[in-house]
Amino acid sequence: MNARLFFTYLVIASVSLLSLGNKNGRASSANKGNTGAPGDETSLGLPKTCMNCHNQGPIVADVEITVLDADSVAITAYKPGETYTAQVKIMASGPDLQGYGFQMIALRNNGNTDLDGFKDMNPNNYKIASISNGRTYAEHDNISSSNLFKVTWVAPPGGTGGVTFYAAGNGVNKNGMTSGDGAGVDSLQLNEFGTSPSSEPNINETVLMVSPNPIADLAKVTIAGSSTSDFSLSAYDNRGVLFLQKTVELVNSDAQIVEVSTAGWPPGIYYFTYETEKSRKIVKTIKL
Image (cartoon, rainbow, N blue to C red):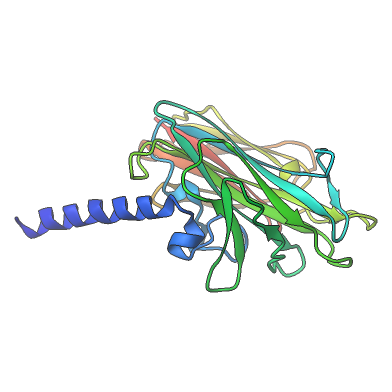
């Protein structure tokens, strides 16, 4: 066996083992946080989430975070010390969709420090895992047959201020590798009940659209929402190679369209990212 062939086998075996290991949760198996939250793992300066690996195939996945009170009503502000359900829903479709996984963290907006408020209330399809930097995550406990993860969360004490939940999730085909899977990310900001709403941009109020999708030689990127500052617009492929990086001047608070020439981009999967100091939105596109 020549050296190149041996190296190829070694890479395939390594990826397979890594994928099988991560079926029990990224924090548990790899000591990594990959929710896209500030302070999580990065690659080439960009947030590294489930989308970096589990986005190589026909499964398309989107993620939605909702925090519910005891009456199952979605909230926009928390009451200190009360218990809530932080729900992660993975909406996925595509051939050979066999199961789901996720990872989530909640951080104080002031300093992006860990709230450590998740509780493991068995029986469920998630677990709590801590990594070496002290952060604590809720994540899947093996591949889940359900696309819904309901995590018990105890709100922090009064005076904490705004908090933000970050989650990444995937739909998988259970082939033991990342090929053929799909993934998405989301975040949700909550204010503390009885305090003035934060003036920080809320990522969930921001809409990022790329058209057409698939794209050919020109992409029209539409940004709409509550951003009150200039923002960064970038695009990178599924290997993390950067193809676009520019600062866009905010013209007004209405929808803004940025035209991007993609004529020289190789065919493949790309991620357009809108980002300010406090918010981020990512859209997956295909280049023909």
